[in-house]
Length: 199
Length: 189
Image (tube, rainbow over the protein chains, first blue to last red):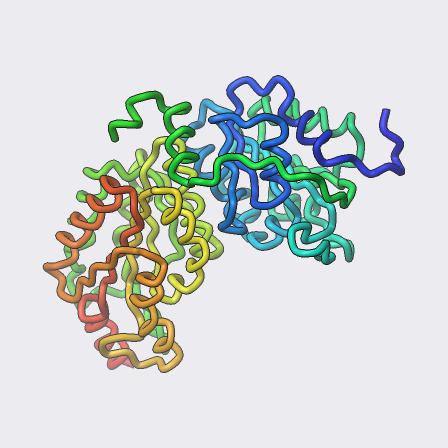
């Protein structure tokens, strides 16, 4: 049981979101969410971003539409989500049932000196997602609620949006491969099979 | 390309251009399934064709860079796509173009131009004149199509480049192709 007054730790959150992940496909936003997902275990079904801030949720949409039988989980940060806030409207319109977006909200730009983001001033990402039309949208503050999001990500009744309030801690980096060609090729080989190598 | 009250859908006095039909068939043959777009009148016939096609999914974007990311995700999942945008939208895409460039992913962009031949709106000039330079600065292979008969073959060539060499490629469809009709519409006002 998590004390309601204690902020969640980001790597505990990610480890739980990725518990027994099966064939879950994961897009990780740049910065700490990338390192968190990689700390949980490098996996060919991960696509960890090293740049292209604002890409994560829309990559999730394109992937979810291309692979409707698979479940797609986007794990990104509050700064990254804020940069492409309009994507919530696009995703709400498209209603991909197999897409879950989990924002690790430490209310900070973590990579650049822990400057406050808009969520530190109370900007309600989950409320914005809900208002856009993503009907399953929650602020998450406890480990039990994280487990609920983990389970929702496997159910395919989305889209699901979660704003997970986390401790603004700076942790050691765990780096996945940095070569975009390797990340793309291994992901496609894992999802599409060896035939993708000949295309 | 609506302007000064002109109705871009009012085609009563001019036959529709046929190049969008050719482009539609070429993109279908290329296996395009996802269409990301911020609309432009110059793309309207092509958009209608994709919307009527049960095999293709048209996604309206709030900003064009969403489409760059969406089509990267599509490629990871084994689907091809195309981004339909106006030249002003190219400016919205610049940093996101890092994604296909560094990840060896195809990206096919069909850009209808503003701010070049025959432009009447001075506010369209800066981005219109900067469009090709901005794309090329980000490593996008650019082909211009400034005559109607060049559009289809340019799209065919760029689609092959993008999907077979895993690179971003853009076709700039000039106002010499798109624009004359608009001056007639404006002249009626």
